[in-house]
Amino acid sequence: MAWAGALLPDLDAASVARLDALPAMELPAGQCLFRAGDSAQGFAMVLDGRVEVTLTAASGREILLYAIEPGQSCIQTTLGLMGDAPYSGEATTVTPARIVMIPAAEFARLMDEAAAFRTFVFRAFAARMGELTTLLETVAFTRIEARLARALLDMAQDAQVQATHAELAARIGSAREVVSRQLERWAGQGLIALRRGHIAILDRDRLDRIA
Image (spheres, rainbow, N blue to C red):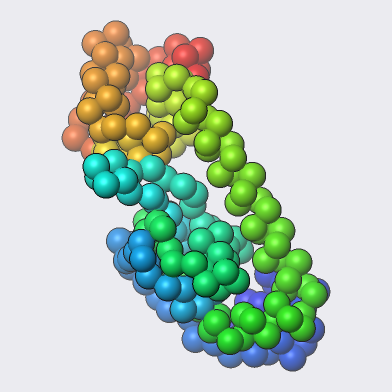
């Protein structure tokens, strides 16, 4: 299965061949890849599907840190392999996914010897840091109503959102109870309609103004 040349077009042919020879894992949705406290065993490359990384507080409240899609990497794994730091979050496939795991020793060799791979890792790391800074600014300085409205609009497909209140709370960095109260308020105002695990957007313009 050839994939390394497409994702890392400037990588040398020998390294591409070694990466292409690594086995791909076919994972179902809902598969946990790592948990808080685990040590990084390798550098995961997502070829198909979507993986979400969440952080859970002692209270049980969750926040979605970032999602990993094809060609992207995981900042927590990079920190684990380069700084010997344990994972602080949890990664779970949210769709069926195909993933190649680059062993830690091969990751270290590529970082030492392959400038193209090193550039890919550092660029991905910088992009993730930018996303996390934006997330921090949003959670710290944006009202719950605006964050929730933006999440609904971003997730909607044909004015329909498939998500539980807990999933929405994790996405915007709030508590499920707060999200539920706000959704019920908007339902009473005619902006949305609620069903279990499903939200229909009835007034996109008003939600957009709130966001």
